[in-house]
Image 1 (cartoon, one colour):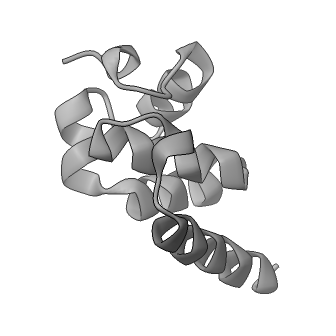
Image 2 (cartoon, rainbow, N blue to C red):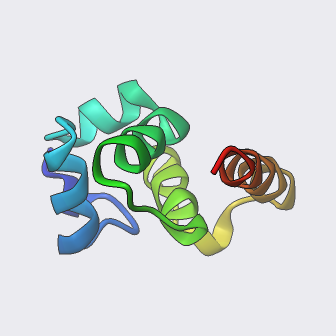
Length: 86
């Protein structure tokens, strides 16, 4: 399925995913949100916390605003740890 058919994935997010070799929804789901985000960060030097939330929502098939507080907390911790390395 096309990436843009997933929740939270618009043209810009789909373009970034394709630039790092994630070309279909099945690829994103198999890769997972954190690994996909890492690819975007390392290969494109791009990506904000909201993109990470969007990717996780897309993997789960839900709008990012419906992510659980626990999942958002986990993703925010992951994001903050990446930024400590910079």
